[in-house]
Length: 309
Image (cartoon, rainbow, N blue to C red):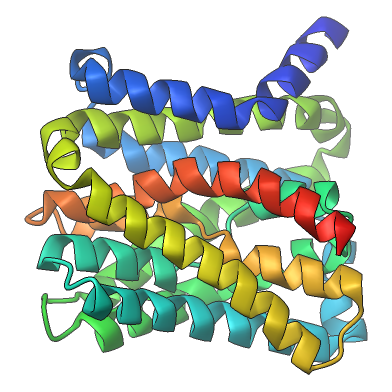
């Protein structure tokens, strides 16, 4: 079992390389992944969310009660900065409807689970990071559909109720199930937890590989403009998140945690929502896939920079 734990740690520490390899393989050799149906994206995301639930404990939400100001500032930054920046970039770059929808979906999603790992590497406030991820995820069924409707409702038909149900089924239900398993079967989860990073890495890789392979030609035809949008979105989120925290005179570790949480989105959820509710716009799932690749890369660099600030 120890050998398996070591393999899991190695896989997780090389998630950026794995994601890059899978993306390149799916793009250059679509047949390597396009035999996997896009319908697998949702269950794969459910596995990642279940793993997140297995790691959560009631104590993880203590910062919500002990430091409500930090959480409020962080969540407002999360759900104001990223959606607003996404919408502005769509206008500035004059993105076509499909790509604009995809960028907006990414911007309206909650924080990603990888943010907690990056926060640890950056020596940020890990408790705040975990609490923010949990709170933003719990808020997502209400906030994400509402924001997508507000920002993209003019260009596409947004099924708010359908998106609400999807987020509850794909995100909230698996997290609650994982949380319950962790609570009632703690001896099992203690043994399983070290394997979760490997399982999540493979699940994320399958999600990205599936999306990229099914849209390989389309991605090649618009990769530059999508890449610019994704990179700017992520970097502006990280930067503005940090500046906002400085305005509120927060200590360095909290600035780091909130900045990373704001800049790193649950892009897997964005791709899942695109595939489920906007299937008539295939390219809408692409920004989420590219964001998944990029934010792991940029997050590692950001961690090094934040440690030196």
